[in-house]
Length: 299
Picture 1 (cartoon, rainbow, N blue to C red):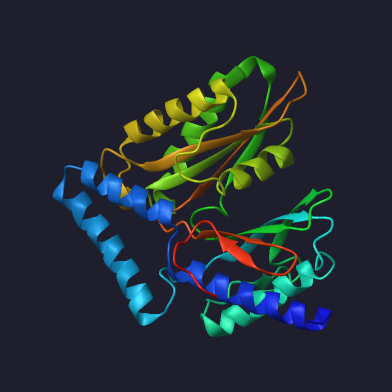
Picture 2: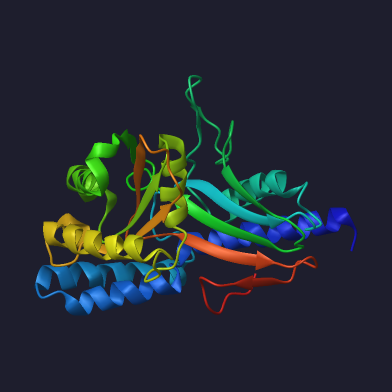
């Protein structure tokens, strides 16, 4: 297969994968929603969950996105330096978004800033967003596909705390964000928290945290304990499904962190809504693929 044929094939794979992510939630999200439905007591909460599952059935049956806001396409690429299409990857991901926009179809969500016009293709200056992690001496490429909706991930918040505020300050920041805009993000939520050394490092980590599987934990024992405490604290707020009240407001809290400067604690919060549309696909050098987030998918 020529390089041009490989580019065409990978573009087609990614366009189909994007379309699938728009219509079908990841296995771990579906399992968690089922678990939370069983744990809720109120008839209203159970009815809301029933509606969510009916939504999923219809999205698959009618072959259309499960939420009208198909978001801004974002990709987290973890690519080996020896992956044969590394030089073409960013351009072909953009082309895949255009292809998926018309084939899925996806709502047109790319408005050129200052010029104020919708491109009609879900691409524009700097969009879709591609975050890169380069892996030396590897010929594989992992791609996390994510649809960042206007009510959930896009209104994330970040700031730098003074060191005296400590981890209590981090907790207060997270809970303040959840009580001020958690309702707008369509609970139950997956909450991504970044703790680092500046606003941009924390913000990036809070987004990266949303790519982790539900139920996973930070490798650091103290950070993992904080994940559990924050989950309990946010659940205690009582947002419930769709913010209509209930015992469970989150699918989980994922913290990602780096070391920090001794005089600052950067913290950021991003959330994924109940319709947490992210997918993870891994390609080898021959473009054989493995999908870890969705079972039974053939592109």
